[in-house]
Amino acid sequence: MLLHRGSYRGKHRGLAPPPAVPAFSRANLASLARPRRAAPIMLKTLKDLLDAVAPRRDAAAPADAHTLQLACAALLVEVMRSDPAITPAERAAVLATLRQQFGLADDELERLVELAEQTVRTAHDLFGFTSAINEAWEMEQKIAIVEALWRVAYADGVLSAHEQHITWRIADLLHVPQGAYVHARMRAREAAGLA
Image (tube, rainbow, N blue to C red; front, side, top):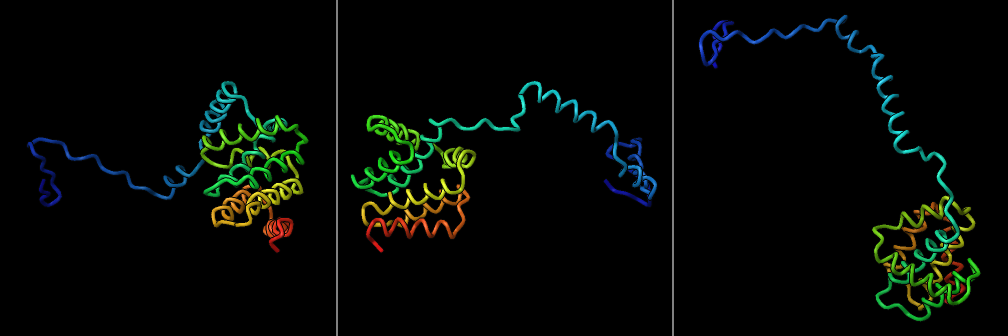
């Protein structure tokens, strides 16, 4: 298409020129900036429809005892699995922590650890476990579980970089402050006789 002195020539003769673009003045721009009243009503109606279909979950239901036991066991098992070879000392540390934390019988502990191992194998991340603990436990309980994670990591006498990283990651997801994280590590190291 060629434009000659303000004229419009299309592919075929006789085509109408393109429509003129309206000029924007301050009054036009001000009218565009004014909120429209129909949008909030439409959004409210849409929100009401969604609330009717899927009820709101403002107050999340607290996790039951079994969910918390499984979440705690899964985190301990994850640290135990982070070592290339799982030692009997690490497994014993997991069982001892769960026994102390929940007061379960030996057969219940074995079933819980087996279930935790299966759950961890299929889990995509740690957030599902840590979020249940974050909702239900106080900071002192979270610090105690971080110390237990360190005990599992130090159980075989050797701390691998992967064990250190996974323990740090879990502590971060549990919102444990850095100072408490370091002190929990030092207490676990002393308990393992490595200080």
